[in-house]
Length: 390
Figure 1: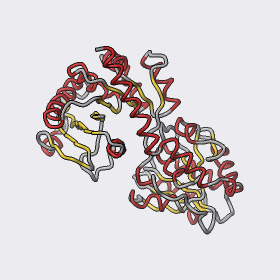
Figure 2: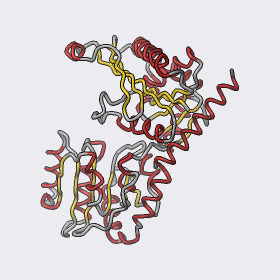
Figure 3: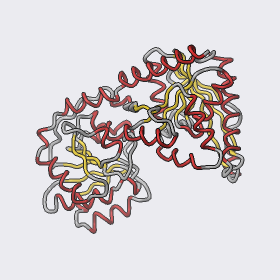
């Protein structure tokens, strides 16, 4: 099948990690024998003249790991007038689509990632070309955009016209059904486990003291300060350690929290870990903890589980997706005492968790084979339905 992706954001170059999971998904489809292209449009607001001068000029075309990628950068004309801006996005995608078809042929199906602006653009392309489209929504914040003048009508029209509407978390499904006024329209399909975890071996039990791990950008929504406080409560006078991987402007404040709690000598701030080394970082953890305020899919949870590590997570959409009695423990959001109790419980029962079983459950849920199989069927149905309506 010939699949053309319309992502709302995408890496600017192969080394860019912004939206890198879209590139990984495209490559997974190529591995399964599909022909895959990407139309990537990025934009700079008109009130940033310096950035406008530096932006790439004209469309750019390349083939990256078997995926044909056409890119274009635009100036977003009126940042607060979203319907006008959407016309600019649509025009850019339409010009790339024409160039793509001239070089690679007409796709069987369009796959938009997130409604704004990619989903709206895919709907417009479909109306012009007759090619069916599906939409995967990744961002809970998209629902707030339905209140913006003019956008609700466009988005609901796009959702109704899609051959499939996919959410990346089970809890997200009902929220989207309600927000779009389309009961039962959305379905859950997991994201893709990063390919570097597809073939890692389940980690052996790490030597040394019991270690709680965390990996993130350390922003407040990840509640790393709460994790440090709960770790202090759970292990006030032991030799247990907490490893915090990641870096941001918030790191000094988190180091202050560790000092205030009197455990600075047992909290290791290891900084940003290169993607190539992240599996080795996970292998140092006895348990991985993600006490976020909100998570949709929670990629990092599945990466830890791919390494065979039990996880502690808050009751976010991601946490409820990932956690069972065989993979870890769920705790309420922003509950310091419950988080501390869960960390102690995992330490005391660590030998009850089977690394191989945790990894197998992860692969069955979001490994490459599971991901490709589910989306291949979604594409097939969208094409069949479109042909039936022709």
